[in-house]
Length: 73
Image (cartoon, rainbow, N blue to C red; front, side, top):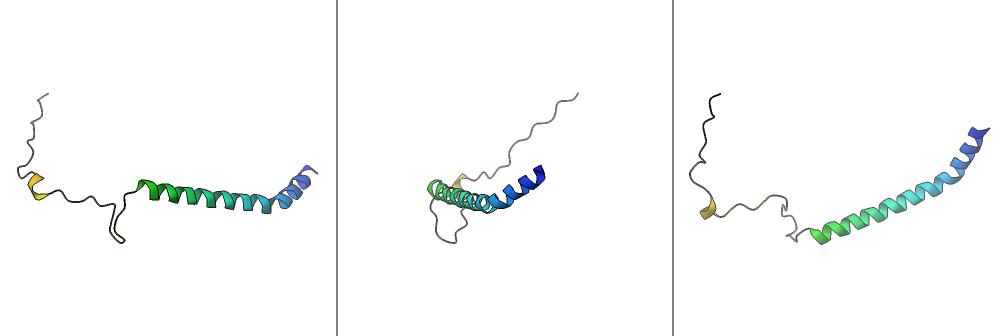
C-alpha cells in the first residue's frame, strides 16, 4: 500500500520536478556563462586563447641550466 502511495505521488509530481530541475540548470548555465565572460580576457574571434604567447627572443636562455651531481650514499 505504501508503494502505491509513493508511486502515485511520484507520477503526480514528476513533471513539476523535471521542470524545476530544467529551469535550475538553465539558470546555472547562464550564470556560469556570464561569469566566464566577466573573468576571461578579451581575444580576437578564432584566436586560441589557451596557448600562452611565446617569450620575446631576447629573454630566452641560450645556455642550458647547470645540473648538480648527486651526493654519493
